[in-house]
Image (cartoon, rainbow, N blue to C red; front, side, top):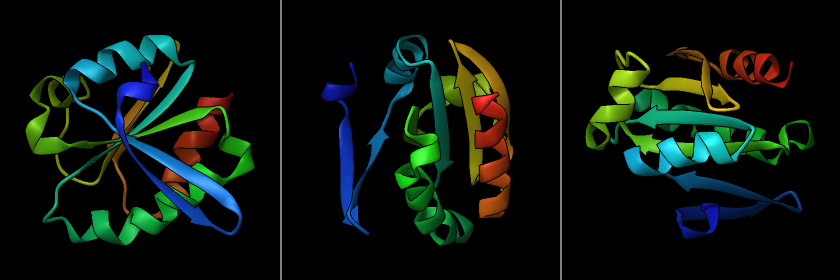
Length: 122
């Protein structure tokens, strides 16, 4: 259940952002509970991950993506999920719809994340 996950909430521009931190066990459950899920796999030493953090937070606040569950996972601590998405490096994004992996890959820009989100809404 989402309520049991650790999360960060940020109040910016009047809209709350909630991005949950998930584990392998959480992800398996959440992709079947939530219709649309986006996961950002990160590494604390990844400069691009840190640079994309404000963009990921802004997208989580965007009304267009209100029905998408935004998750972050530590790539090193979640080997089952890494294997499922054929993880290669960070920052790595995976999207799920109705329990099925829809898209995944390395990202380097907000535009690439937005493109994946837009495909998820179709």
